[in-house]
Amino acid sequence: MNDKQGLTLALAKGRLFKQMAPLLKVAGIELLEDPDVSRKLEFPTTRPDVKVLVVRSSDVPTYVEYGAADLGVVGKDVLDEHGGRGLYEPLDLGVGACRLSVAGRPGSDWENARQLRVATKYTQQARAYFSEQHETPVQLELIKLYGSMELAPLVGLADVIVDLVDTGNTLRANGLDELKVIRHSTARLIVNKAAAKLKHRKISDFTANLARAVEAEKL
Ligand code: PRP
Image (cartoon, rainbow, N blue to C red; front, side, top):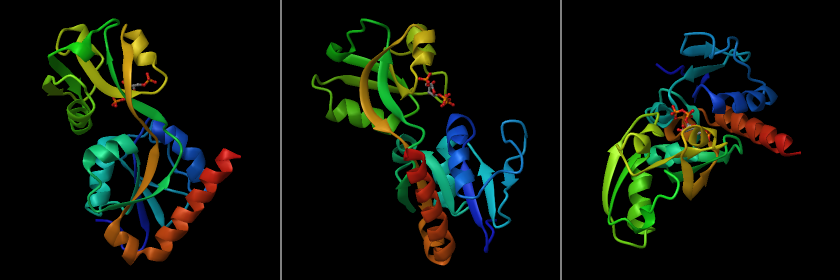
């Protein structure tokens, strides 16, 4: 169970964690072990009242929604896919900038296709995009995948994918083009609504410290 007194923060490993670590450090929080090396999932920090849970990025909003973590850091794209139930989103952290894009084989005539198979982890946003933004009415088939989406157009599983693009290296390495940017995204601090009341002082201090760290990074 979540510690009644302290703060529990849910973070995902990988790229976003690497970008968050310097911000957390400025806010006075450092993990006592490297989560990329350790197999642990729960980490004490240099602040005895703050612990970190390391979870999959798509699970961060769920941990915070149910109060298993008071706070979390997650991409806006992942947050919107979750729906943001039970959460406040007080701070744009500026890190983890990426875009949600349509990608596929070079020269793909996807915009004129009457039928389109789309592989994605982001089914809500893909459905919204193709139903609201696409000019030609398409018969849309969404195929939910959980990773390695770039394979789908290569092996004929889908015509295009909707996935996150940062450097574009993964698309290039697989001979795919970024065909259309759907939206831009950055990481957000999220807060459990009940915790925001019960631990008001701690959470507002934490948020203010992190906001100062974000501002300092911009200078
Ligand atoms: C994301 C995304 C792409 C890749 C894009 O995957 O799904 O595969 O990053 O980044 P790039 O444009 O810099 O190459 P991630 O590595 O976060 O892992 P995931 O598949 O578990 O989401």
